[in-house]
Length: 262
Image (tube, rainbow, N blue to C red):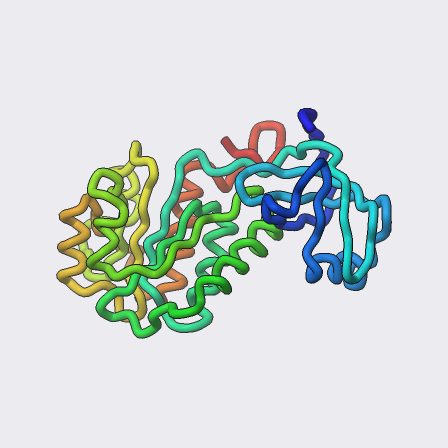
């Protein structure tokens, strides 16, 4: 399969693990088969799109359709939605319950390439056992938003350990801090104009402790404020990602009216 199908036709998209693709065919999981056959009521010969989360997206034609077994033959590569020009890594202080699920979903839609749940001093939730759920949400959000890449989601790590996990050379970025009084977010982003990957550090409910802020500053982070209002951690994260992507042009349109704003 070395030809590319440059079609804009809207089709149903499915994330498939690389092991589901072999010899030019894709075999869907039982859950996907049920969705295709019973929920979407698709038939043999219908077209779907499949992607493996690494940037490859294929157009495929259904050849068997059943609630327990459904498969398709690959027809060619599709033009996937472009990824952001700069890699964005989110270091998210673990919040309670559904807040992290919301962050994972919307950060995926906004083009994040990696999410690292961080256990901070003020973290109430520890993230134990939630990783499979977060990864599933990221897959679903990639399906919905047209991305052919599923962001990597790490195991939760302690705040004091993430510097060693990333390495000092790769930890420059912006940290949201409610006590910052002189530097706005766009000014902080200007200071990071050439940084790639760009890290965004957001605390949990209650924010980052002052010694955590000082530690992050020592690693190369700059503090930034999102304004005078106090935002929930999930609101602050999505607002900051939206500002970043808007400033980088990722939320714009190309001159031909397509979604590729670069």
